Length: 319
Image 1 (cartoon, rainbow, N blue to C red):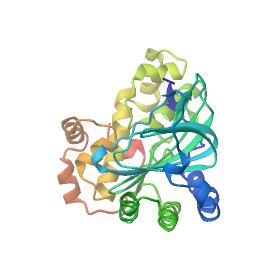
Image 2 (tube, helix red, strand yellow):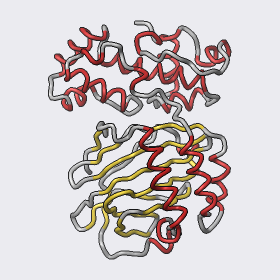
Image 3 (cartoon, rainbow, N blue to C red):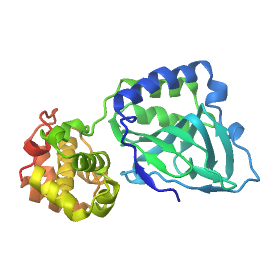
């Protein structure tokens, strides 16, 4: 398996994703539908090459909420497996995979991992997760997942799941909605401490990792290794500049994101727990009460759903 590391170059900023949808995906869907987004039975045929998956995406949402996966190979090539079919394809390419169908986007064929850049969309009952990634022969780079909450996406995609062919009109409508949407999770800059620009470069790099991947399983030793510093030194820097340990900082990131989703959406608290990185509801509930002094359900009832401003890690959650 290739190691998966966060894509931190800024390549996965939402503005650039929306631009890609508008300037690349929608024009391809409009003018080049037959070859760009053809039915899988025509795109993929049996291959004698042995294909081995080399990279996985971890999605912080239970499978029961997932309706379909849509992917666009924007650059390079990819060894793709969907069900029993597989093949190696060049960009540009779009695929649609209904719920319940096994698929792999990052394959190795005959010992070779082709270079490819993807923009993927996991459509759910409440919206969609949007993710950019890049696979090279040595590493799988995964961007920050963006959560789009939109009630109109699910009905459109459910129609396609029930049909034998994917509708061009439906896909144009889906991506028209996504191009105009706004992500619901706090952005990188919303949660940064005011002193970020003055911090040592090692600490800024560590904060980048935490902010871009707070919903994923993280080991602090891995963060330290990525920053090329020992863990004890990283902990000292965190306490010096943020007043808390790396673990406490990570918890506050997750709690800030949870509070925002609780206040601005009607998603079930148990789903919010998964979205911000808690696999067990009991752990999330305990930490939420410890942080805010109320149960998630009590917080939502006491404060009407409305946009919340001032998303600083230092003023949303007390030390």
